[in-house]
Length: 164
Image (cartoon, rainbow, N blue to C red; front, side, top):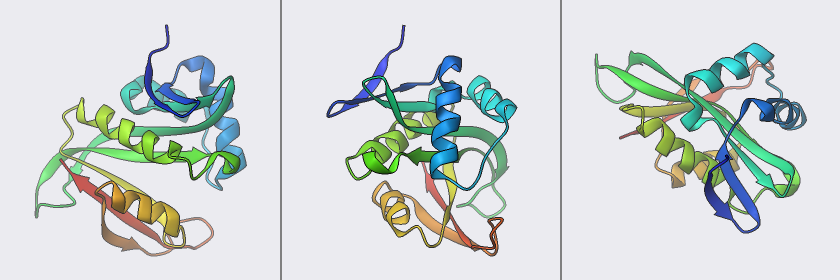
């Protein structure tokens, strides 16, 4: 049984099931230049299903978010070693953007990350993606660093983080 985490108009957000992965990969291929192996999707689903979510409108898959948890140096404390969530990928099909689905996916993934007792949550976003940067800032993320030539095409990324 699939539990609806949130409803946005006539769209829903729920946890991903392994049967959803092909549709999620299709969204990734249509919307983002970064692509991942089948195994990568499967491993993230196995590791952190609480923060691997899909958005649907009826039977149409319209967006997803996938995250992982890791241990590493804090983005907020000098010399602090913490458990943190990492937003690996989020996408919403273009025709379904600007209606709250992206925000809801991030908000629900934050809840999933918090259930794993993470101290902070971080992500990388293209410096040119102004809409996404504004969205993350509205949700409490702070630009912590500029990562030079982070993407394969040479574009810089902002590393943004939120502390719990």
